Image 1 (cartoon, rainbow, N blue to C red):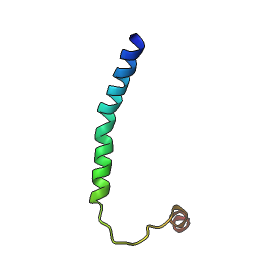
Image 2: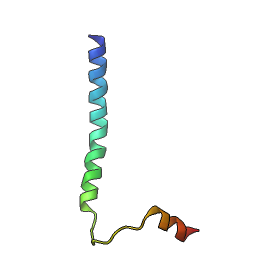
Image 3: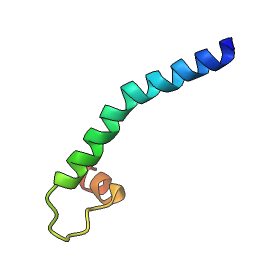
Amino acid sequence: MVLHSSLFSALVLSLVFGSPWLVASVWLWRLRPRDGAVPPSMAELARTRL
């Protein structure tokens, strides 16, 4: 019984603290303007900085 309650409380705490971050990430990703262009790769960005 103790294992169930500690597992349940850990699950509830992770949902309580994790879900706002996930919702905000999806919301901001959907609001991001899209122009159809392909974003530059990380290698191209590193090459321009060097």
